[in-house]
Length: 132
Length: 175
Image 1 (cartoon, chains in turn purple, cyan):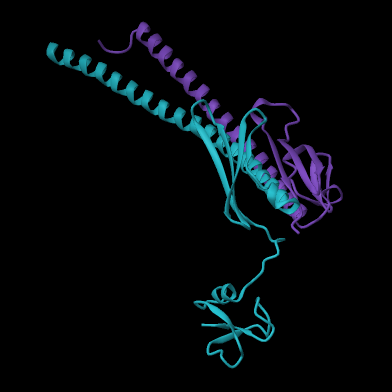
Image 2 (cartoon, rainbow over the protein chains, first blue to last red):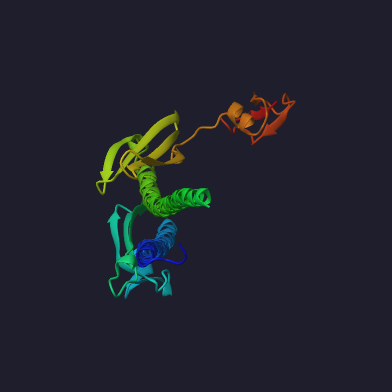
C-alpha cells in the first residue's frame, strides 16, 4: 500500500493537467476582458470630453467648422489637442440646421495591429445651438 | 487496521466532492463578475449615447421656442440608430412656460429596458409681459398693491408715477 502505482500517478497528472488548462484559459479570458474594458473606457472618456467641449463652444456662439479640426485622428480645438494619442477619431462631422449644428463623432481605441481585445469604438451624436 | 482504511478512503471522496464544489462556486462567482463588468461597461457607453441624444431633443425644443413659441409641442417617438427611441413631451405650465421632458429609451439586452430622462422648463422670453401693480408687488414679496396717489400711499411705493399700469398721476403702492 505504500507509494503510488503508475496508474494512480497518470490519473493524478491528467487531473492536474485538465485543471491547469482550465485555469489558464480562464485567466486569459479575464485578462482579455480587462483589456477590452480599459480600451472601451478610454474611447468613451475621450469621446465624452470632446463632445462636451464641442457643444459648449457651439453654445457660446463659436463656429465649430473653424474652431475644431481633425488631424491624423486627433481632434484639436484652436490648435490644442482634445483627445489623447491612445485613441483615434475616425469621424467628426457638423451638419448645419438653421443656426444649430448636428454633431457626429466617432472615436476608436488606437489599435494598429487590429488585435481583437483592443477593439473598441464609440459613436456619439447630438445637436447644439448658440444661446441667444 | 481494516476499519481505519475504509474510513480513510471514504473521507477522501467527500473531500474531493467538497473541493470540487468550492472550485465550481469560485469559478462561477468570478465568471459572473467578469460578465457583469462587461455589461456594466456597455451600459455606461449606451447611457452616454442616450444622454447626448436626449440633449438633442431639448435643443430641438429650444429651437422651436426661439422660432415660434406656438410650435413648441410634443414630438412623437423617433427611432435613432435602430436602437434608441426618443420621445419629447411638452406640457404647458402657464401661458408663457412649458415643461419639456426628453426621454430616450432602449434595451440593454433583451427585456432589460433602460431610459434617460432630461427635464427642463422653457420660458417664452420674447413675450411682451405687461406688469400690473399688484403682480409687481407680489413679485417683490408684498401681499399685494394698488395704484394710489402719492399722498394716499401708506405702504411702499414701487416705480414712478404712471408705471405698472397705473394712471399717470398715481404710483404703485405695495402693502
